[in-house]
Amino acid sequence: MADILPTLLFAEHDDASLNPVTARALTAALALGAPVHVLVAGENAQAAAQAAARLDGVAEVLLADGPAFAHRLAEPVAALGVALAPAYGALIAPSTAVGKSVMPRIAALIDVMQVSDVIAVVAPDTFDRPIYAGNAIQRVRATDATRVLTIRTAAFAAAGEGNAAPLRTLDLAEPSAHSHFVGEDIAASARPELTAARIIVSGGRALGSAEKFHEIVEPLADALGAAVGASRAAVDAGYAPNDWQVGQTGKVVAPDLYVALGISGAIQHLAGMKDSKVIVAINKDEDAPIFQVADYGLVGDLFEIVPELKAEIAKAK
Ligand code: FAD
View: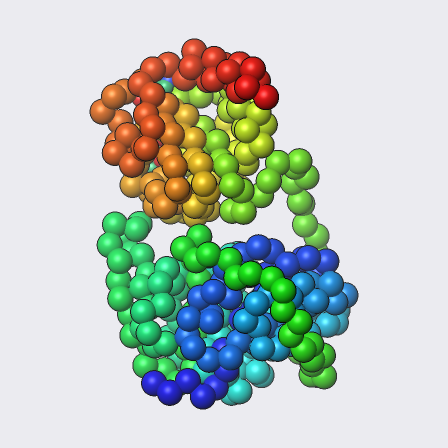
C-alpha cells in the first residue's frame, strides 16, 4: 500500500503537558512510514501542543483549541477526527480511556474497521494485537483506505525529543456537543501514575483487608518510589481502589520492575503485567502460576518477607 497520505496521531494530554504514552504511540505511528501529524485537541492546550512539537519525527502539530474540546469528551473529539479523516491514511491513538472512547466512534462514523491494541506494526497495513487475554497474538491486515488504530503503548519505546515541528492552529467550526462535562474526581497521589511508572508494587487477595494492604503494600511501594497496583480480587474485596487494578479488565503495564505480593498469577492478571522487564513474586504457594513468569520468586509469607525487604531497602538508602 503506497502511503501517500500522512498519519494523524491523537495526543494524550491534560492541556498543560503531554502524557508520556503519546511519545510511545508516536513510535508506532512512524512505523507506518508516512509523515506523522499530531492532533492536540483541548482547551488552552498550547503547552501540550508545544511539547508535541518537540517529539522527534513529528512533521506537524495541529492544535484544536476551544471549550468544545475541554476534557476531551469523546463526541466532539470524534467529530473533529471525522472532519480531518479524508486528509489522512491512518488515524492513531494510544489505548487509553480517551483513545478507546474516541477511536471506535471515528471508525464507525467513517465506516472502517478499527484495529485495537496494536503491539507491533508488521507493515503499514498489517498489525499484531493480543487476543484471548494475551494468550495468542493475532496478525490483522487492514484493507480500509483509512486505518484506525489504537496502540498498546507498553509495547513501543518512546520517541526522543529535540524536534521543532511547525504548529498549525485549526480553524474549524466547533462541533456541537452531545455530551457535557459534569465533573471529575481525580485521586491526588504523590506516587507515579500506574501506566507510566518504572516500578510497580501490586498486592493481591492474600493481603486480607484494606488496612493490611495499606500497611504492607503501600510502604514498600513508597520505599521503592513505585506506583501501587492490585489484582482484581483485591479490588473486588475493597482492599484497593478500582483504578489500581492491573490485568485484562484493568490497566496494562510494562514497568522495569513489577513486584507481585500474594497474587496467584491468573491469566487475566498476567495479561496486564507479563511484559514487565523484571518480575518479582512473593507467594507462599510454590506452585502459584505467577512463578512461571517471575524472574525472581520468593516462596514464603508476605507478612514476614515484605517488612524485612523494606528494612533492607531502608538500610541500603
Ligand atoms: P488469588 O487467586 O486468591 O491468589 C492469592 C494468592 O496469594 C495465592 O496464590 C496464595 O498462595 C497467595 N497467598 C495467600 N496468603 C499468602 C501469604 N500470607 N503470603 C504470600 N502469599 C500468600 N484479575 C486481575 O488481577 N486483573 C484483571 O484485570 C482481571 N480481569 C478478569 C476478567 C475476567 C473476565 C475474569 C473472569 C477474571 C478476571 N480477573 C482479573 C480475576 C482473575 O481470574 C483472578 O481471580 C484474580 O487475578 C485473583 O487475584 P489474586 O491473585 O489476588 O487472588
